[in-house]
Figure 1: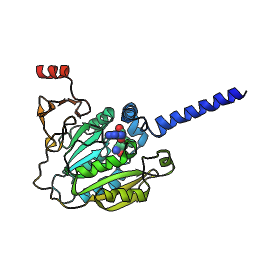
Figure 2: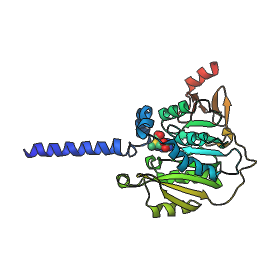
Figure 3: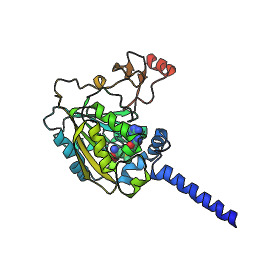
Figure 4: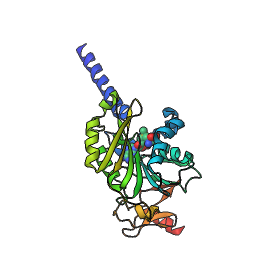
Length: 292
Ligand SMILES: C[S@@+](CC[C@H](N)C(=O)[O-])C[C@H]1O[C@@H](n2cnc3c(N)ncnc32)[C@H](O)[C@@H]1O
C-alpha cells in the first residue's frame, strides 16, 4: 500500500513538473530549442487561442508607438519575438505609418504565419529567423524596439533588454512587456518586480520609464534611450544595420537571392519569404545555389 502511494506521488510530481516545464513556462527552462519547437507546433492555432483584439492592439501598442515616432520620416523599427506579426500588423493598419519593421523570431513556423498575414507588404515588413537574445545589428540602429509578451521566454531577459538598448538609437523608444500576476511567480528569473525593472532600465541608459497595467498577465513598459540622435541622414537599408551572426561584421550583401557575408563567406538563404539567420547554408547547399 505504501509503495503504491509513493509511486502515485512520484507520478503526480513528475506529471506536474512536466506540465510546468512544457505548458506553463512553454519550454523556456529547457532552452531556446524547446521554445522554438513548442511555438512551431502551436503556430497554426496561436492567433485563434490568443483571440487578439485589433482595436486594443491599435490603442495600446500601435498608436503610442506611432506617437513616439512622430516627426521621423520612414522610421526603422525592430520587433523582437514578433510571433505571427502582431506588432507589424498593428502598425501597418495605421495609414499614417510610413516606416519599415524588422520582425524577428526563433520559431520559423510563427514567422511563416506572420509572412502569410503580411503578404503583399514585404516592402514594409522584413522577417528574420533569429534568436532575440543576441541581436545581430549594429549599435544605435533603430528608432524603436518592441518586445511584446516574450521577454520571459528568453534565457536571460536582462541580457535581452541590454541588447535592445544597444541597438536602439539615443532618443529611441522601447516598448516591452513584463509578466505579472500569479503565474509570473512560476517563472523565477524571467520576470521583474516593478522596482527591479526601473533599476535595470535606468542602468541600461534609459530615461522616463512608464509602467502601465495592460492585461491580467502583463504590464506594458515604455521608455526612451537617453540622449538624442537625428535619424535623418542615416542609411535605412537592412544590410547597413544587420551583422553576420558568424563573424559579427556588417558585411552582408544580397547575392543570388541570399544574404552572403563578404568577410567570412557565410550565406543566409531566404525561405518562404523569411531570412534564415539561424541556419547558414552548408557547402553542399551553397553549391546548389551557385548552380542556379
Ligand atoms: C507569446 S508569443 C508573443 C508573440 C508576439 N510578440 C505577440 O505579441 O503576439 C512569444 C514569442 O516569442 C518567441 N521567442 C521566444 N524566445 C525567443 C528568442 N529567444 N528569440 C526570438 N523569439 C523568441 C516565440 O517563438 C514566440 O513567437
